[in-house]
Image 1 (spheres, rainbow, N blue to C red):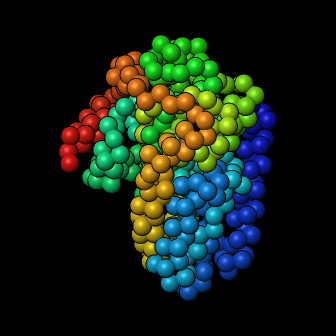
Image 2: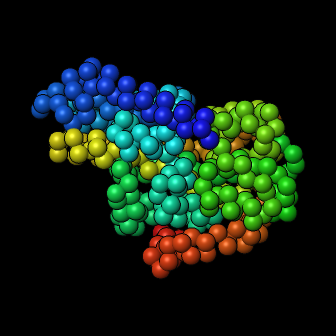
Length: 344
């Protein structure tokens, strides 16, 4: 724990140094520049340049430049240059990182109420998720971020998570028993897999490949696009189409950064994020069939006939744990999200 704390502090100091450096290069820090000067914002991701996140960030940067008349620039730091997802959350709270898109799962320690989006099988499909994240319910979700030090400007995505492992095919919950599975360091994810007999091991994504390769864990769960960009197919054999959790990625801005920006640049940044959503989602999930075929081509054995109803039933008690913590407000939010399932 001490080593992790020291590493986290070092990465935050690095982010502060980068923040100051780019403030000098851009004639001032975010929002403190006189009218007409260029403001440079730092966008951080732990994923690589071939990821959907990076494609979304490029679209965001291009839109910000266009909509601000060149006054707002976004510098992209990929490959965990500014730290893990947790470091990015802390960095946005401190103002040393301006923009990032950690998943709601990764944000769980800071905004546990937002983990309503991570409840197993709360979303039926992508259309259902988009009705929630892009519709009236999104305003209720945004309010969950009040007072935490950053807030979303729009929702990118990770996509629907699927289980992989290197031990055996998984079709029903009983097949999971005893598997050591990497999960996000979030209670909802860990509890869900414990309910089907797995041994959850919380790890940051930057540690996943090595943990799988060395046998620290047997498996993990991620959407196809993350399995591909992370090259997890090299250290995993079996892929089960569980589609148990939809991963939302709120593209968020530090409150400290936001407060420094003049109103016209706030408007431009908000519009740029909204414009980037379609690009990022297309890169993440626009061709899931093609992504699956690539994984098959890399040698993964795919179990398509997964008993999702059995997984849903086995993991359902996690919903009650959420309601026990957040009471009627939590239940009302679950009901509102589920109420969008049948709409077209």
